[in-house]
Image (cartoon, rainbow, N blue to C red; front, top):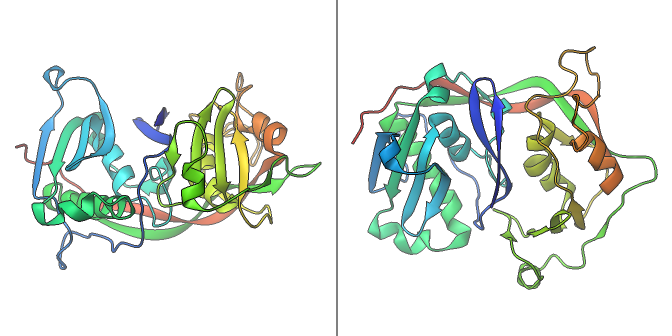
Amino acid sequence: MRIIRTFRGGCWLATVAIVWCAGMFGLAQVSGVGEKHPAFEVVSIRRHSAESGPVQRPTTTANGFRSIGLNLFAIFQTAYVPPNQSGVLHADLIEGAPGWMCEETYDVVAKVDEADFADWQKPEMRQTMLHAMLQTMLAERFNAVVHHESKEVPVYDLVVAKGGPKFKQAETVDADELRQKPGGGGMMSGTNVRAVPSPSGIRYYGISMAILTQTILPNMAGRPVVDKSGLGGYFDLTLPDIRPLAAPPGESQAPNALAPPPGADESIFTVLPEALGLRLEPAKGKVDMLVIDHVERPSEN
């Protein structure tokens, strides 16, 4: 797991470059009223203190979920990842968070019900169960109410750079064969993509442009990325280590200016064309926003 922490709008946010192995599929939104949703059997929520120990990212455990010393915004990022995507929901796709959600830190430890334990052990089910149970927890313990809204926002279009792509079609997309690839890392959540750390960056086996733009590039570019490359199929490629941006470049320049901020010699705008033969073009696009209508501080236990 490689975690990059980004400061955005008063929040320290977790963005994930390599995610744990798990599956995910469609999930109904939790609104706090009405239907019964999957839930943890036991949930402990306390304000973080020095006695709690070091900060721990939101993660699954053998029998539940744990997040130590992080703000509630990070829990929302984990709970509302769209179906068929991995990692965390990008910060720019969440609106309506009150200030305390970014400022106050909590320890959240949850345990699944014994009746759900067998399913929890299945990688293809755990992530879906996690999202459903976290959304239920947010509704029940934080009185969270959310809705989704389509908005036009600044995005980047991913296009092929002059000279064409600098990577090849995948040798295989078979999950069992990909697991046999040498190196560490693991399968990306909800995909048949193998992600292997290397001295030059991250080697992705069997990745599509859709997964690249939905899951990986937004955290590096600082805003949503739309696939306009026209490249279908699956590929093996290495994405070098890229410095994440605290804010999209060109914000203080002319509209749609595409220039890396000072000192960002390792930014995606420099590395992407050189390493992959792809580039980003500023544009406007419709994206699905998660809007927080209501949320309250929890009662501790």
